[in-house]
Image (cartoon, rainbow, N blue to C red; front, side, top):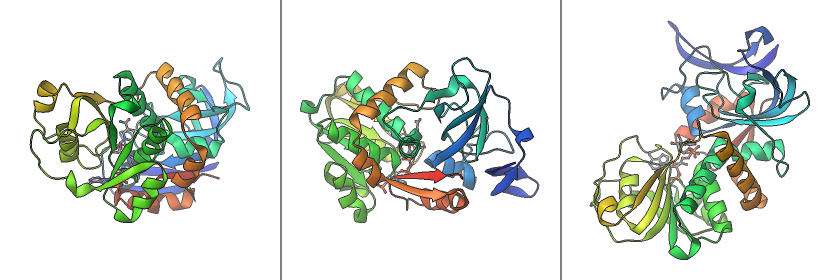
Length: 326
Ligand code: NDP
């Protein structure tokens, strides 16, 4: 038996609770992992609270991230004792995830724990941090170098935003954060932002084009915010879109794209091919200041995760949440 969060949905409704789970209930897979830590991402909070259609199979153990030690494996790349990390691949959505003491997985989904990180640090990064790095890699791929100008990061006090601000500033970019929490301005600046703008400047319907300011952007918010970011991006600038914290819609016009040659680069972490993941993790080892990662991280126990999931959706959580599942 092991402990884990179980999400159930039936006539009695949608509910999540910490339960004792029998090993025999674990799903199919060629690698069994003794999980040490998981995390709470925005998607996990939607899954736990039922506020978004994340879980597509019930009962479900949520948790899109996990780190742990291989307990049993019939996959040629892994043997008992190996330290492994998992992000995405539908885990916590269609396959049981990381918010439990044990997981059984497809070995193809795993990556070795990078030597630079402890298990806690790997989860402090988690899907949010690895997605932030995918955004940085997309900016680089499209030619956005630090000399091109300012980079805007929305949702800057959240998980993706905090890691994006930290990495971009370490790489020498001038970073401007956007946050709806003035009390977190000093925190965002401590991660490396030169300035923090209020969310309200971006959150309502704006003009198709505004004053050109951003050489690049990392947007986690979507909706009017993404539209306004595109409208104020400089000629040939690049906007990476990875989130929907403000809404799934995109009330924009084609003006930034056809008149200023702005590139809108979509970023997905869930099905991202393995070679790109390995590059992202390698770059995190190189370009993320571990002292800043410490500032970004809060650690909680499995029993607290359900309450913290609601706080996260209310926008009350700063940075990243690591869950010690033991
Ligand atoms: P967090 O909740 O940690 O951060 C989101 C931040 O967005 C909040 O902290 C807040 O920042 C801001 N925010 C929240 N609500 C609103 C709103 N209504 N309007 C404007 N800003 C808002 O979540 P994560 O960082 O884990 O994820 C951020 C987004 O990225 C989510 O939508 C998530 O689903 C998505 N995501 C996508 C991935 C992908 O593969 N494409 C992978 C990982 C995440 P502040 O308080 O500073 O304003």
